[in-house]
Image 1 (cartoon, rainbow, N blue to C red):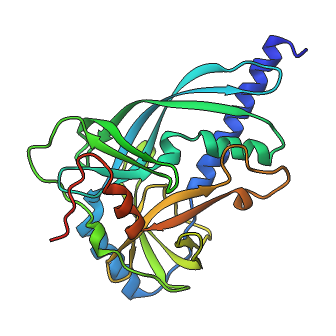
Image 2 (spheres, rainbow, N blue to C red; image 1 turned 90 degrees about the vertical axis):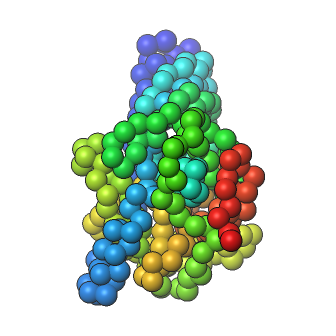
Length: 281
């Protein structure tokens, strides 16, 4: 039987490994872009839409267990990104950021480890563009689309800037897209933009786009994606082999893939969320 101290060290090491891998996966790297027109479009888009990207501070309680050891609960605090999708401040983000259990279990399978992770979102804080903080609450989880919807705990006095989900644009293979992000505390939560190309379009069972990878730049799950004409395309979420479905020896990309979920699917899910104001006139 494994000594208790060794069991604890193993669990701490596993937790650290899977979170580092997940954090690395969420930083999709930008391809160098030299076209002046794309740069100009990106700057214009940043000026117009940057305040629709918000930071969310998440407090998550998690319990990780492996064969030969019982689970013990720990509380972690992290930051994630989300996009405002209605005038009343409803936010859409990647569910994987609020409940990473299925992703981490899949990654454990990839490393040949049989692990179980239970997570519970304890608290959400919305960090506004001006740095002010607003209490939030989750109103809907959609694991099929990897989406979570967060609303402010108290109504805002003024309408918020938002992305209209009814204006979703279609993409073709190798089209360029512009992705808006808000950096972490180390960069003062400054806004950022990067450019990718669509390297694949998956049609079944539901349509989604696979962004290219490269060297330089970073972004986070929950970041909104636009075409070079400034039209909304979707947001970045994770597609994964959850529930321990990963398999040992496989590459990370075989088990977990960042994708662009189209606006139409986000709208379909949002219409089930309490407080969603459909802006279709």
